[in-house]
Image (cartoon, rainbow, N blue to C red; front, top):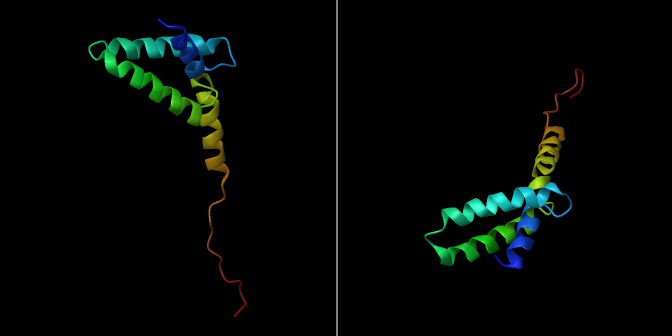
Length: 91
């Protein structure tokens, strides 16, 4: 394995924590094994996963639970539009 793969493992798992590379390495190793019959697609997969993680999950897979909790918390807190009912006695 090249040193670029190790960097990809760290970024995908999460650079800011010790568990990040421990999460990223098994995910990408399993993906590599699943694509063992298609060696030309491994680089394409790793590059695609790297771009998606950098764009949408800057903290890697380790930060994903925190991002999901934050997202669902924001969705839950948004006020729902209510119909304004006319006040009694107003035209």
